[in-house]
Image (cartoon, rainbow, N blue to C red; front, side, top):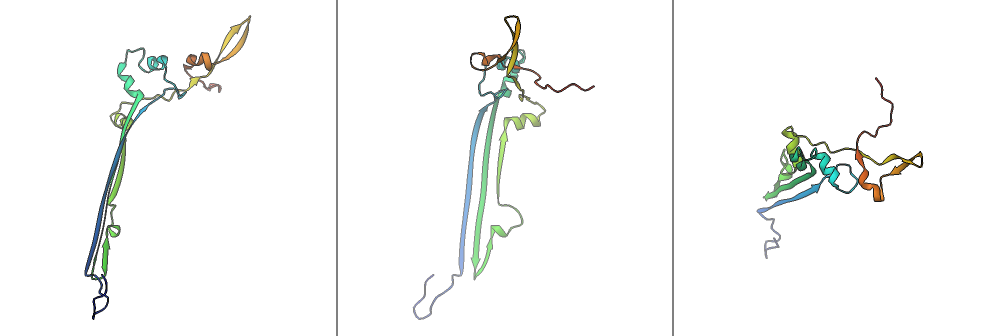
Length: 153
């Protein structure tokens, strides 16, 4: 407030402000079982057990939502200020929820973290050769154990 003629500057008796913020979003992610950047029919067949368990195809999709809410306010009365920052609890929150979180809480797990087999040995002219599963042979990436460490009993 500005000065009043003949009295001078005057402090405001009451000031207040408030703001509310709300936001959110959604996401859809297609999960690649072997993380090679491509989804192939053999991967779908593997996940669904050759379509004997077609419900497992849901494991290949991850749908998510997120949101946030915030509240901020301040009041000044006769020079004394109070703000939501002074409260002993938060006045804003956010959340992220995905289908994997929900399925996991219900005990329905989807373990698609398999390692691709990136090469295999083949017979060539009576000898062995290593074929890298790339290019024209990229679809030959199979699922299985790729650990070469010795088995300890």
